[in-house]
Length: 240
Image (cartoon, rainbow, N blue to C red; front, side):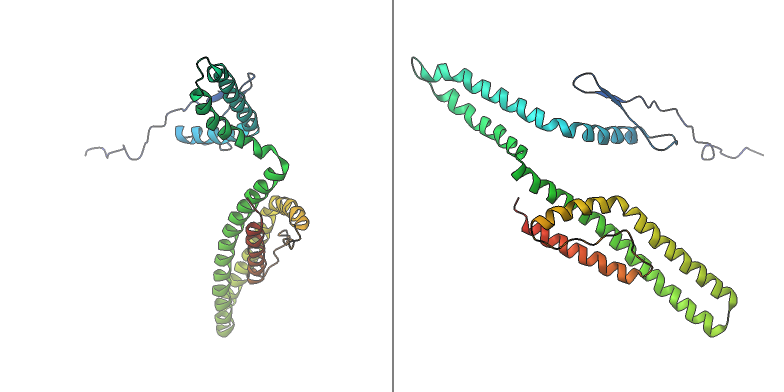
């Protein structure tokens, strides 16, 4: 009797190096960090390092922008002697000015009056995306609650003790799920507090706290819808 094909039953696993690192200006080195203990895919490693590098590079962007302006300004200064002549040739100076203006415009974001609205709009967009995801989860919970209520009615009609126990368990799971959603919103509440500070300065209504969603998913959905509408009004009112 021939042996069965074991190729599908035993998949070869190769050890993957997890020493991807990036060296930053000044010699600081960042290496990839994965929260999972499972065997990572090379693309997963690279994506994680890219995410970590983006976060680390963000504070350096203004420095790079300043360096770009200095280089563009230096190029324009070098073109001044040619522009004066003899014979006068302003073409090089005229050619470098648009590049200098383009580079210098990026430094406007360093001015608080211009950068703060951009930051607030970015925070609002992040919060809107989070609330949209939570809203979809609440809709799924509401659908589940409707089915549980129907099952509870049927259990009462039949006098089925086992079905009643299942309904009670399902209701407890729904309550736990809503509580976990409220717990997951704890970091978001800190973000809401920051946004509320700016909204108060702008004379806009404050956002509700999402720490306690309660056990009524329909009511919690109303709270989220109100927060989303307030955020959209605030976003449209901020000039960017």
